[in-house]
Image 1 (spheres, helix red, strand yellow):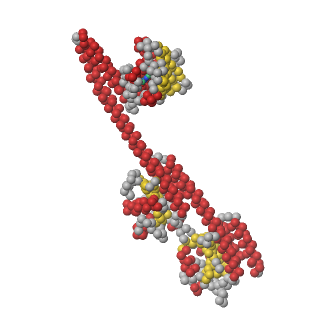
Image 2: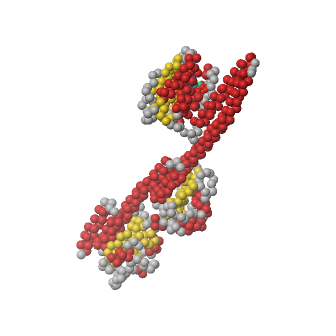
Length: 600
Ligand code: ADP
């Protein structure tokens, strides 16, 4: 009988070792251990408990009596209770035996209803026999407890050794399961950190970053809730700044007193690059007293949470905010890996806060510049408008006076008229520029024949060109090159380019005008053999009031607004104007406008 039992036991143990090494699901291995202890070692009941992160032992496998299984499976008790039992236990190798008569605590588990045998080695219903289940490092991972030895006697050496062998295998299975969980945890945390990093680096608006990050933080760091608060400027009050809570239905909003505590912890933690843990059994973080920790824990207990982690959010030497994460007892305290992942997330969020601040400052600046630009345009329009009427009056009176003037004064009157004419042109240009810059006056588009416009302008300009002995030449114009826009503005753009070409060219030179299309764009090219423009001047050419420093160019009358008007017109028509020029050899200006599919 004994040899039969021994061979069954060895067979069982062999199977168990194969299963453990094959890295099977730990729960099925633990069940196999419990079955082996019952069938192979000879106990009526075997129960295995696993030590949870919250230091509770939870029964996860029971074999033998179904009554015991019903009563024990899933049962939890604090590790401290086991420690008390171990304190009075006899040490049997790695086993611990608590004789009924030595037990310090009343029996809380399952007590079999059997009559003990006679004799000093008889097993008593309240006897306890445990095999601690340890990792290879000696760390306690769980415990195997047995009851109801088949022979009714406290186990002898052989039975104990066999039991120890099963305990070793169960320890290995629990250790494997733990490593597996750690690996899973690493993957989960890496995923969480990655998604927060992605949101923090790709989103510019801070509110957006906060909204996007909180859910992955709660999932990744296994919290039941997270409060995030970041400050918009330096030295803000703890309750201010921008914050959010996840899950959003969490209505328990921390009062300012608790926020101030979190802020204190965050500041100290950012300095130390650590996470502040507030837990009933942990030392309080340096920045808080034990009473303050108790106050915070009482507060979060109202929502059913038991642990708090304060994760600082910062960049460089500045702490810019914090995350307060809460967790329930059953999820255990945060692991080192989770704390490291939390810190990483805090750094990412810190960078995001800095980016967002820069972005918001930039947005504000753009808005301010926009306002300034609108103000400038309005001022220009008003002043130009106000100048126009008096100028017309001056011109009218000059003409009247001129009629009655003495013959020697004709020269002075001509000078007055010339200058009034220049001022009128300047005012007209300014009025046009402010209309072109006014977003309330968009292009009233209609199909326009670009070739037709150029033909008219060349015609009109030919007298002026021949007066200056310039050969103005228009290359044959293709049938219709249709663009969408305002004919009068497009005509004005071509006039400005052509009059410049004539104005800045010496007598005897040629101005060549071409109109063509390159499939999607209509192009007007004005090429002259004139003064040319230096590379430095080309960079500023299209700015308002720009006039070249070249004395030959300055000798010609001008306002410095002609090309800026061309540029505005081109851009309003979704086109562009470009220049290619060489000082002393001539310039080519090209106006490019998108073709329309409609016919003109
Ligand atoms: P304006 O001709 O009234 O001075 P524009 O804005 O039309 O103003 O031109 C700005 C400056 O660009 C001119 O003052 C001139 O120096 C230079 N420029 C423009 N077109 C030409 C050209 N075809 N050849 C040489 N210089 C030119």
